[in-house]
Length: 489
Image (cartoon, rainbow, N blue to C red; front, side, top):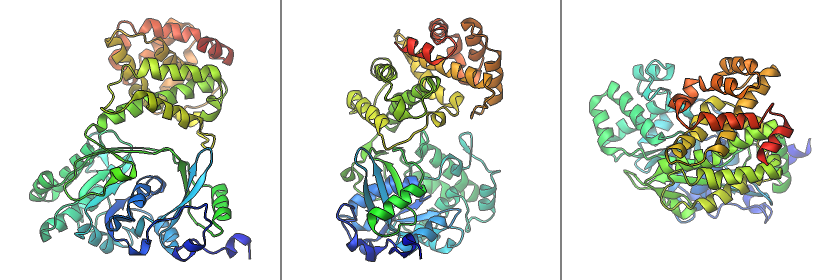
């Protein structure tokens, strides 16, 4: 028998024998009670929201989680034999392991529909959270897509739902019929205005089924917005082997994330809530401001590193942060060109926030590939950098450093097109055609890119934008490493 097969499996009985270096629940997981239903218990939820809950359960044992997989059985099947325990590897200068016990039970909606609906109707459940990715909302623009196969199914068979929205409404309908107070619905997906969008979709679906139920949901149910942030690399075999070696027992599905984590929650609940603030979450009424800070400062800097770093032949964020000229440029960009322009939420000090971003970028345990960050530039740049440029122009500020980041994207597109490498971008064909036609003449090349209305919109014709962008493009010359280094200097 192989050594890893002979190891004891991680479960409640194994907790007492774990090494002292491994953190474990400060409570008895078997003594907790379900107060939260979470739709979509994937790696991000287990590395993020479940950890906040784990920090609270010793003093507040009635807020344990029932995780519901809407489509697959894998999480349930892997973690049930482990008493729903799993290991979190926190990646930093000194990586460490922690066993999480916040998941009281796991269910598969397709195989256990009655148990899932019973949980949603349980008066002890006062909060439903979701991490289902944007596609799980079944939207067409801002509205619910009634032609989506799952929504069409749920309209026809509302008591046997497949979609997240269908489950929410089925649970709320059962509670209304029984005179039970509704639960709060908290989206934790990385989606701007997530609570507003989920509320709109839920009301549209409920109205199609029962207008009176829709009116009750509209009046009684809260859909707070939230913002989440933490890099969570995928589980791989080296992680499994390392965790098994350190635990002295086998964990079939450990997960990993960076040590930094952020969760900002709109303080708007219709039922009781866990004291998330005691676990480090921030309650706020300006989620949009926190989203904006993350998009402009963190994500804007990420994209800048991706395009300039790629032109320099660098492969990861960590390696980019070992390039002095690039580090100095990105730090100045955040402190001098972005932070003074962005309307930050009350209480957010840009100095420490930028310090934390730079520390995250330097984390040697995270191998974040620049090629992946460079994906979908035509979709990302408008919200990450171009909005800042528009506001800087309106305030009469210098936009030259910001233009260098945009010019780097243009040169990156040009280089990929000349090399015959397809872009991971919805506008791949059009961008590739522009890149192949580029001659190095700044005026003609930049004009071709500015013709992308879905990317630049009215900013393309904004006075004061074209000239500094052409100058930045010319500074990068042919996009060679030598030209980039000189432009950064």
